[in-house]
Length: 498
Ligand code: GLN
Image (cartoon, rainbow, N blue to C red; front, side, top):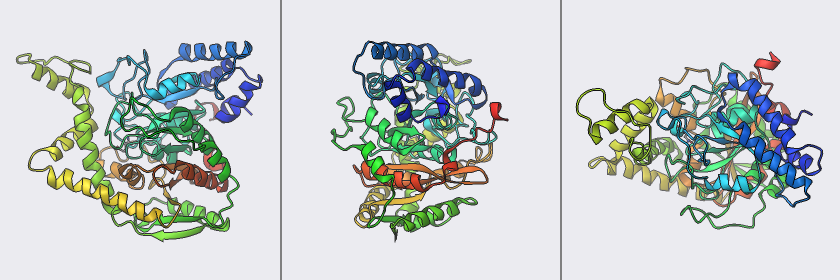
């Protein structure tokens, strides 16, 4: 099999066995990026030199007989809102174009310690706001399954890179679904761990109480491995969880045989009510049938608060974002723009900067967030949304007292076409309807490729109780084992193959 089609675990084994060098592997991905990414635009920055230097160092240490970490030499891609020292980190925004991070995020430090060459930074909706990457200031990423369609968002770049074999795995960030929805529409695996399981230090904040870094991969096992590599306690993040002894890759292994006798899996009635595109629910019910055949008991559960989760999210998220994005003012951060007329004061400069350098979706959310936090509106909007958040947490706690995990479709439709939703924010926001409850409650959730509709991938989401990331991986591996292989094998309908 071609190098680029191997999983990260397989590549690590080949490198350790001396059958492939890290330079060979890294070069294979760089060559593929060079060949395909002019069309796909999954990357905003490719660090050819840095990646090859890291790979060479791994090969030299292996040749010298040094003991290296188990995944040393396997390259990775990183979403462009994660700081890497000396490398352009833009969040897909003109505001940060050309800005080079002065320090490494904790996850980047962990990646460097694990000796993974970093291929580059991936495209995203500006400041992680969107479901299609159409809001990237540098132009959208294309879905490798069909380049007339979106790859999801905001982390469409990481998902497309992994789907099209431009990287074996990648990091994303998920505030309302930005790892999982792109995973669903690109036939890749993506996980949002329990809030606090992976440090957010060095992740450029969108909505801090919801933001979570997580793995993007082609297999559940690779995702579990990557979460383990980058996760763990970090004193630099005050919301970081203590270290645990839980072995996530072992949990993924355990789930593979998919013997589910005695397992209870919940489906939330409110999630399945309406709004799905053609074929999505059919793929989902096929998944349920296969799970039942393997002995699982499927239990219907009601989570009445889910009906209000999307609305609550679109109040809490903009509120936090409006505060986090205040630092992009041309003084502390951001490319300064002077006003073209009138007096130049700090205020007119800030206004000109924010007017010129933020895109339309970012402005929309800052205005909304500022409004819901303003005196007179705070209680009725922000306060009510926080109450809904508590109800979602309670509904989920009650659900998890009855079942081990919850399962649902990850996204309401297959990948849509460019331009279809861009002028209708409400339609765009509905893409998050099944992913948002996990962010509001801080529980882990991941997407697994489950089937195809008209040749386009559909994902299924597994949600687990807080701190039960191992159960999430175990059940996800069962879903993966039961899914048709074609669901995750992107034919890359473009360039070379056409
Ligand atoms: N689509 C969601 C939004 O636009 C997801 C954001 C995210 O997870 N970063 O808010």
